[in-house]
Image (cartoon, rainbow, N blue to C red; front, side):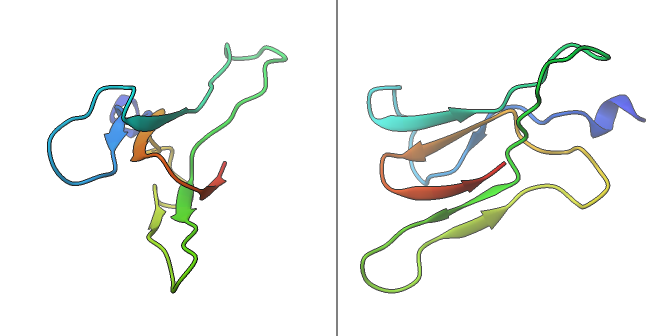
Length: 83
């Protein structure tokens, strides 16, 4: 059960067919080795910055659990990413 609460697979965050890496922005988190001095970066969510009106907003996971994606794939643009 605990293993099922691990990091999710890459999360495609756009509609339509899968795009190649030249057409999207790929943001990756980092998980270091357990009990090491590595830093960890977990993707908790993002907000798209729009010049007119509110942009798209997405939060991942449930507080207290670790079901966050290790990678998100977005159309290129301006975003605030919460890690």
